[in-house]
Image (cartoon, rainbow, N blue to C red; front, side, top):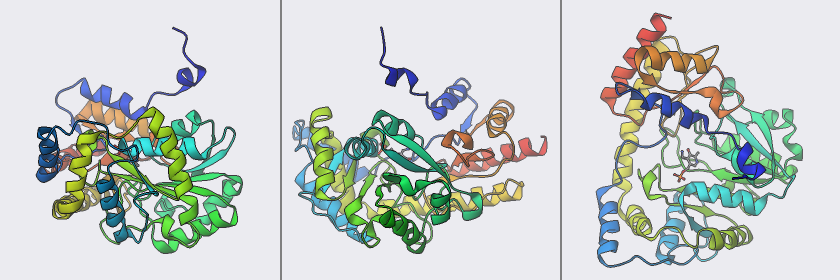
Length: 379
Ligand code: PMP
């Protein structure tokens, strides 16, 4: 069958390719996947089951259940974000749909979209599908992978129409403080750049609380914030996320959403209400556990000579392996049966690094880091 040029030219995900290699063996410890090893909190699962027992299997409102939108709006007060649940919140099928809708609602063909790299792999293809031109803004290990005004200027981002900002970051685990974000916000205001802020890891921080670019002066009206339940509540398979933003942006996104998705799936919306109402304790426990693992992994990598900056959020470490990261990852998998993702998959600045997910049990992390140390020793 003849395919559209758009579909034909879309590259295969570099992460997937790697998983297939890992899946071919059964002795592999995978530090490759970007998802929690926990299950969703039990009470959230029960709320989903209960909704099914009560026969709640219809569509919801296009924007998502009103009760859920209210909880989402309340929840975001903790990040000093204030949104009207009736007009400024849209519940989506994962954060993925929210990112896609944001691009489709904000990008015209030929618009330039600046993306700091290394970063999450879906933005490039999303921008391409919306007809935009991606402009890469490399971030540096020397800046702990924070986005800076200098890096934006050096990349020529002053002419961009939109900036994608993802902190806490996948794959680096980098976070940004309010002071650092103030510079980026000033750049966006000066150059009239709108922002898509993917804050899906906001709840997973290990030092300072999450800071959002949307709370900087003059930024709320030019920013769409994306978040969701996959990471904080270990609900990746339930496919629920949302967008927060000014009414006109959320309206436009909802107009696309109502034709392409109708509404986000109903059952997880019940789970999500419960998660927001009563699962702060479970989230805190998961964060504490990730933090223990983070400290272990970062210190082990530094001990074995793979320099690793201290990630402030998400559940990834980004050690430097030097040289050809793809060869390193392939040889490591071959020799020691440990799967990690080569940093170059995540764009410019990722080369010479590895993305290591520590959303894996302490036991496996100890075993995996022993094997990596043996590999590095023998190299
Ligand atoms: N944004 C980032 C930065 C991610 O890491 C991920 C998941 N890997 C997503 C969005 C997609 O999340 P969801 O499961 O909610 O679609």
